[in-house]
Structures are given as C-alpha cells and as structure tokens.
Length: 341
Ligand code: NAD
Ligand code: TYD
Image (cartoon, rainbow, N blue to C red; front, side, top):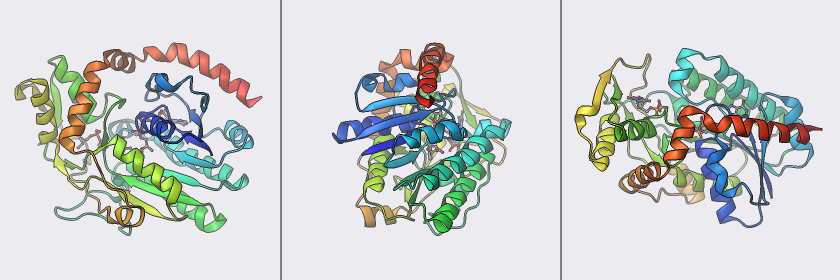
C-alpha cells in the first residue's frame, strides 16, 4: 500500500510515519511537506534511508506538484499538513486560510480527479469550540470554531464532507484533542515549558491557567489514525481523546516537578484573546467501532516526553534556531524539482 502523508515532517505526522514503518512491513510512504518553520526532516532522520520512505518538498496548495505525486499512484492519503498554532493565527490568519482551507481543497480536487480510494483528514477538537463544564462533545455536536485556526480547520472539515457528499470521495475525518510527545515544535505548551524550565527561564501562563485541555500521548493517536486508515467506514467522523481534561497549571506544575524546578518560574501573562476555556470530547464512537483505547497514562507519557527532550538537545536547538532548514531546503527542493519533471 502506497500512502501519501502530507505534513509528515511535523510533530504528529513524523510520529505517524515512524509508527507505520515500524508496524507494517508492506507499506510505502511518500511524505509531502512544505518544510515550514514547523516541518523538520531531522524528526525522521532515523528512517530517512528506509527504502519504503521518501520525502517530497512541496506545498499542498500547489496543484501541479500535488497532481504529479498522484500521477505516480497513491492508495491512500493522510492529511496532516496545516498551520497549527492558535497564537500565530491571531497574529496573521492568512497562512492558515491558505494552507488549511485552500490546501485541503487542492488535495480533495486531486483525490476526485485520480479516484483516490481513501482520504483521511486530520482535524481537531477545536472545531467544536469551548466545552461547558461537564460536557464532552460527540461527533454530532455543532461546529463552533472560535479562533482563526479553528475556523480554518472547521472550513476544511466542511469541504471534506461536501466533497464526500458531492463527488463520493472516500473520506474519514479524525478530530483529536491536544497531543504531546517527542518531536513537538517548542511553541506549544508542553515542549515550551520543558525547554524554558530546563534553562530556568520564565514559563508564561496565559490568564489564570485554569483552561483545560485533554492531553493524549502522540503514540496513542498514531495507533488511532492507523486503525481508521485500515478499518473506518467511508464518511465516518471520529473523535479521539484521552478522556481526562486537565488545567494548564497542573500540566506545568507536573513538568516543573519532574525537572526538579520551582513553581516560582511560572509567570502569569496576558491571556490569549478569545481563549477557549475547555476542550473535552466524547470518544466512545472510536472505542466502540474500531476498538481503540488510549494506552499511555499521562504520568507515563509526560515522563517519557521530558526524558526525550532531555536526551535530544540538538533537535531542540535546531528546531528553535531553524538551523536544519538551510541544508534540507537546498537538498529536498532539488528532489522536488526532479520529482515534478
Ligand atoms: P505541526 O505544526 O507540527 O506540523 C505541520 C506540518 O505541516 C509541518 O511539517 C509543516 O511543514 C507542514 N505544512 C504546513 N503547511 C504546509 C503546506 N502548505 N504544504 C505542505 N506541508 C505543509 O502540526 P502537528 O501538531 O503535527 O499537527 C498535525 C495535524 O494535526 C494538523 O492538521 C493539526 O491541525 C492537527 N491536530 C494537532 C493537534 C496537536 O495537539 N498537535 C491536535 C489536534 C489536531
Ligand atoms: P497550545 O499548546 O498552544 O495548544 P492549543 O491552544 O491549541 O490548545 O496551548 C495549550 C494551552 O496552554 C492553551 O490553553 C494555551 C496555554 N498556553 C499557555 O498558558 N502558555 C503558553 O506559553 C502557551 C504556548 C500555551
């Protein structure tokens, strides 16, 4: 089976590619990634020479390169490619609309044109908006995106559903809560707090720090995606979560405790505009229909994550400085040109 993974040089995509290559022998993966600031081929250095894996540097908005890849034959697509950081979407929503909406549209057009058998779209819990206390949204809940990032992801979800309905695209949508684990770019809460705490830098806590997120270890999510890719019925939407929303302050205190650092490193800073208070999902559907369950407890996952960042200082430094990009951009841009001839 030949799988096109878009955004595979990012956090979840790189973990997913590694998971597939380790768990399935008969698989070929084309990683199609623009290598934005968040895309780091060093996250896949250990499997870069695997003959089943290749990287194409390209933009999902560019129909010429997308069609080139499809022309070479694809059995399934998993679309991770996106702009993903809420704070950046508040600064400037344009790249979010471009990649998350127009890019998804471009992939759907290619799927239609080339009769792609399977299109797995990676969405987010943020499309449902903020969940009232004691409410967990199921897949039937109304979409109520409340940040530019969430609005762009919800638009993409609607496009996927419209293309499935109108053109019969065989699409599956996964909406997951916040992931954490190795290879996450240090702008998101968990890696930022680990990186800052290690250097005794202040840890910015937005507002009162009592906003809740439902943290899922990335390997658990990768298993869910692989299951959906293999078994989900076309047209299905699945929520994925650990089922245990926790306040940000608790997450940050846990990280400080593991690193032996004082709580005094935490600094309350101005809240994010329009900050969603709580994300919570009912994920009983994927448990019932696909038999998926989270396997890694938060205590275990956060310990493994901290240990990974401690052992991978060079990855962290290169991600922070963008140092890996000069070499890889030259190297892989050449390959993409070769690919599209
Ligand atoms: P990430 O920011 O770490 O990686 C995104 C990847 O997409 C990068 O490799 C980047 O280079 C690539 N990319 C961006 N624009 C592109 C374009 N125009 N063409 C091709 N590639 C492009 O993201 P992530 O955290 O791994 O998230 C992956 C997906 O999962 C996203 O769709 C996101 O919305 C969704 N998601 C993430 C989380 C989370 O907690 N990280 C939670 C729920 C849903
Ligand atoms: P983040 O990792 O950006 O994910 P998302 O906003 O998509 O859920 O943020 C997780 C939570 O942590 C969110 O409530 C915002 C908060 N946060 C901080 O308090 N300080 C920070 O420096 C960051 C990056 C996030």
